[in-house]
Image (cartoon, rainbow, N blue to C red; front, side, top):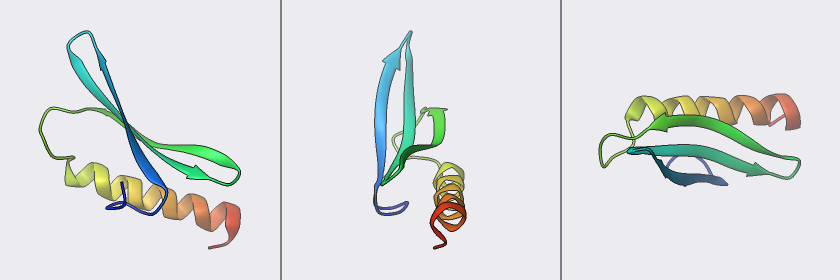
Length: 66
């Protein structure tokens, strides 16, 4: 999901009538889970996008000094 940040991806999981989404980032030293939510509309909610942006930037700042 380049709309969030480079290296971010979305995994889609359907289970028991729910359409789950897992937003994650692939980093050199880890796979970082940014958010998990039950998707109810065609677009990813802006609040989820903003939360993911903040989390990956904070992770990179703490771990890699970026």
